[in-house]
Image (tube, one colour):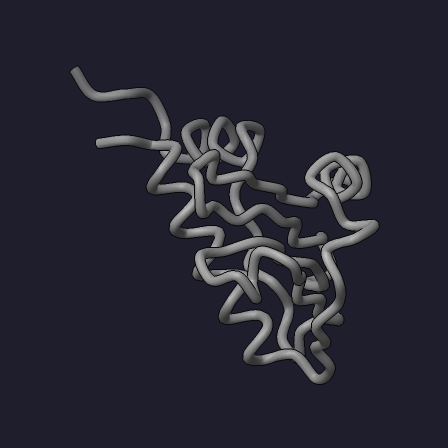
Length: 113
């Protein structure tokens, strides 16, 4: 299984869901929202960025507060625009960290052989 492609699909789906659930979403020109611009603005704790790396790919960022941006796509219109969205009306899911996994394993007790 291609983990990169699966992750891109999951993140794009999550971003689309957040766009649909957000109170305010708007479409903006891709000018000023290059891949490097979006990546540099996606460096906070809990922010998740992606780039699908394909000819018709998307890139974007979902911030820790549920707001974000999705740029690019297949159609000529999408290639020239980005969709931005504010904080979603529900808290974003929290993905576990490695520390969370270690604590969970310690809580389960010693591993069975």
